[in-house]
Length: 190
Image (cartoon, rainbow, N blue to C red; front, side, top):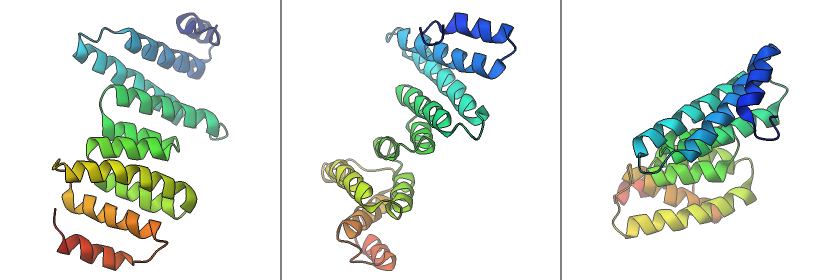
């Protein structure tokens, strides 16, 4: 029943079998399905429905056994999607980060103006996978640079400038130290 997307019936069957974790997973998918079908004219109800579904997926991820890593990552990813639909971009970014979807996480942080979180994500991940993060940095710099040049003030201007300089430094294969990045950030306020 679950794979046929009959989540309500699958939940009842799992509950009768005493498999509460599986029932909760079905309930999370059912909540997301209901949120997606909520009318866009009642935006407050739609946001609340997606928040409820996101919280359910987060709980499923936290309750999943430690051996089932892919399952946990999938639930955090689903939570990120729901938080994104609910326009809670900080929690969407956090969930995507837990799902190891770093590009999606960075995009949510950028869109929400959470440049400190974006900086932390990029600096922590750049050490692990330089090639992957170079592509991400190039993508994010384009959007960040456009928002700064168009006069859209980011939530944390010094952090945004520091992020730009750090990303440029990483693209130049470490031509600057972090101390030099701090000096540039302080001497060039936005």
